[in-house]
Image 1 (cartoon, rainbow, N blue to C red):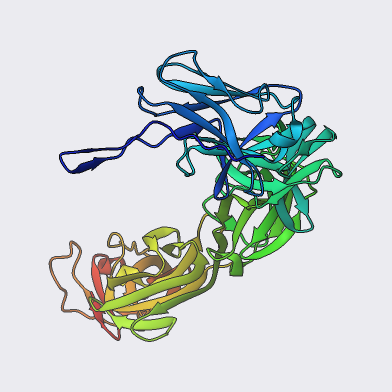
Image 2: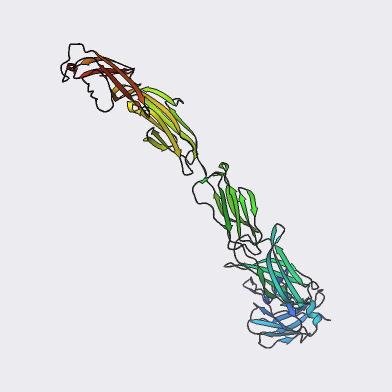
Amino acid sequence: MAVLKEALLPCCVWLMLLFVRCSALTLSPCVNDGNVRVAEVERGKTSSFTCRDFPAANTVQWIFLGEDGRLEFSAGKCPPIPDSCQVGVVSPTFTASRSATESVMTVDPSQREYLVREGTLRCGNSTGTDNTCRMDLTTPAVVSACSVKFERVGTDWQTTGRCDISSAAYSSRGRYICRWYRQKVSSAKEQIKQAGYTPSSRVCNFTEALPTAVGVYTYSVTVNPGDVSMEASFTGEHPSAPTMTGCSADDYIAENTAVSCTCRTVNVGQPAGRLVWFRGVDSVKFGNYGDDTLTVSHTLTRADHDVTQFRCVVDWATNVQGESRTFKVGYKPERLSFKLGSGSQTEVTVKENNTVLLTCEADSRPVADMTVVRQGGLEVNSSQSPLTFPLTASCTDTGTYLCSASNVIGQADTSVSAKLYVECKPRIALTEPALEVNYTNQLTGLDFDVMAYPAPTSFSSFKYLGPDGTDPASETINITLTITCQLKPGALYISTCTLTVHIMTSPAAAGFYTVTLFNTEGSLT
């Protein structure tokens, strides 16, 4: 067959020694396929190719090229006059038309199908990519169903897609392609995979890792030949972050308390994930896939305090972290210690007006509230452990001191005691007593309290002051007198003294008398 070549009218001219090139011709609809451009021509249907971007005064030349490069002929020629295109040598397989701005080549594959199966169309004589297009004779694929799902394979998670093609497709160029697209809500569609298939298998699928970003996704596919597009039915959804309920809300929880925490999620994902409890970095309990609730119990020890973290996650393709809790584990006061002075003494004797340091402390969590009371119930001081305070000792401070401790967990099992003795000279505790003496010879006694420590142990200077207490008598009164003093239980700074008088004289000896008591610190008259 003769090779026919007819050029377009000259597209480039010399003007004032400047070379002006016309715009490149473009041919559509053609898609890039590697380093060439291809357009499908469906069996039994006509297809149109449009040539654009040529000067209006030029003749448009359509060229057919054989696959092996040895065949080349004119498929049509269109001069600038509209509707005046000349048919090529293979009419009516190729029929050209033209307007002022574009020229259209209509291809009928039912006539000389073999030319379409392996041929290439070119608009214009110049060779190039934009104005050249390979024809692909096709029978479109018929896609019956497409689906995409998230699935778990062992411990791995992946996205898989599958399209079933219900009838045999045909592509003279062997272009059996599936293009998979993914679109996150409010985001642009993106191609994620291009995969081939064989006409005999009629299955087109893909596998990829799950999307890393949480969101709602849709999937679609375009299948060639036929450029058949279909939305894929999608099964897959990220789980919701779990929440923790039921755990004690107390600031401190007593040691050996069994806490029970429940993890819940409103959505375990699709396919279903499972809830997992962690203590620190170790998993301690696994739920079943699909269960939206999982409860864990743990008996708290002191070692768990502010260290052991409990958290719940949804075990899925990417673990979905939930809430966490670190417990404050408390215990009631123990190992109480009560010290007097700068050492570790629990029994101290000091002089009156000296200063003594009292220190009471306990081991506890949270810090214990300490209270020191003197025997008899009088509160001396209170504060958090350690309780330390100086005491300027007075006679009335003699006694036993008790230190107790408590916190929100409980009261210490026992209190601790310390004894303080304040040495002071005797003094009347309340009011000075009076002694009434009978006229007959007899033993007459009187009990009275004296403030002193230690207790008075001696007396002297028994004197008669006369009937009204203002005229000391010079005469000697024959009276037998004894005084004994003992510390008062519960108030060691008080001595109860018993004065016993044996009167040996007449009633003329009636009146007032004085007596002086002594201890190591001084005397009282």
